Structure formats: C-alpha cells, structure tokens
Image 1 (cartoon, rainbow, N blue to C red):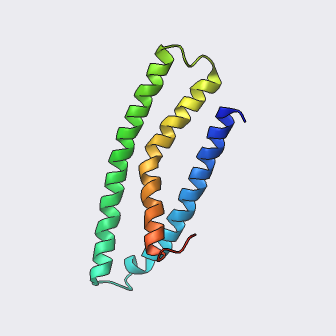
Image 2: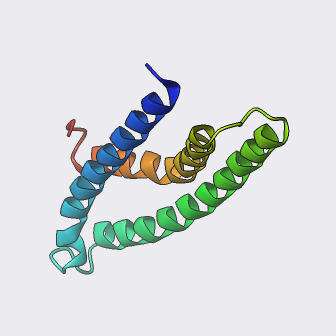
Length: 119
C-alpha cells in the first residue's frame, strides 16, 4: 500500500478513536459536572484533573508539533521531500504529533471512567 495512503488511513482511524473516547469521557463526567456529585471529593478531583490534563496535553502537543515541524523542514532542506504528496504527508505527520498527547489522555480517561470496559 502507498505509504501516504497508509498514513492517511492511520490518521483517520486515530481521529475516530479519539472521538469515541471523548464521547465516553464526556458521558461519564457530565453527571458530575451537572451537579449530581456537586460538592463530592470525586467531582472536585475530576474537575481539577480535567482542567490540568487539557493544559498538559496542549503544551505537550505544541512541543511535539514543533519538533515534528523541525524534522519536516530538515527533510525538505535535504531534498527528501520533492513532490506535493510528500509535503502533505509531512504536514499530516506534524498534525498527528500535535494530537498524540491529547489522544493518549482521552483514551486513558475513557478507559478509567468506563471502569476498564473496552469501548
């Protein structure tokens, strides 16, 4: 299979998986955030965790994107990217690197909040 097509399929599945995990996480957290567990230590901990994890994932994603972009520009300067498809593939790699920390956290949260049930 063409490496670019393979990367595109992988990025698409990555996005679908993150979307499903985000839905599971939101469904599990919504009752806590809507007041069912208001004042409970669990609700306070989930709220703190939710905010801090988003900030951490954003920072990690930005750093990963910078490194991926640096590697991509180095490949361009060395003449390893010579056609538009290679350029698009490189940018998709940067996007995947940026999203990876959030993807990892949303999957872990879905698994934890769903009681370890596979979704």
